[in-house]
Amino acid sequence: MASEEPVIPTTAGHFATAPADVSTTAGRYATALFELASEANAIDAVKADLERFDALVAESPDLLRLVRSPVFSAADQLQALSAVLERAGIGGLAAKFLKLVTANRRLFAVRDMIKAFGALVANYKGEATAEVTVAEQLKDDHAAALRDALKAVSGKDIDLAIKVDPTIIGGLVVKLGSRMVDTSLRTKLNAIRHAMKEAR
Image (cartoon, rainbow, N blue to C red):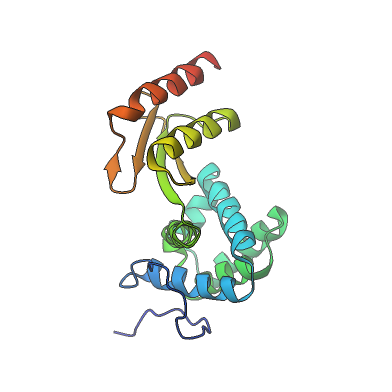
């Protein structure tokens, strides 16, 4: 079986960042993109564009179907994706990357690639990534309060990876690194939870 290495030109690794899991397709693509973004001084721009695309996928059942369904041909996916990227104002390296992923028939793994890229960026910047699952989209002030609470406990700047899941009980689940939140955070998180309910 052919290797699934991404066909992205990279310069031999000269970044001392902890890599994404390069044994996975998502990890290899994310690592290759991170190296290119670093060389182009475009890490923040690429991250912002990928996060915008990921949010579009999360919000649109039609786009999620396009990304995940094997019934669409690569040509159909590429045509639809190009229209989405243009409408969303996503260009440059992020757009080239997303189109390459589509042409290589790896679009089904794109959300994992985006997550892996985010982890590489966070590590590069000395940030920690908190995986946050909420019953409904967080308002900006709640996200800021959550970020501050996590920073106070971890001592690091926190990048939030937010997932909306209406089925969760309690309205807010936070995982920081490999652990679920500990008791020192519970009071602060309960206050944020309460604020989210009051804001409805």
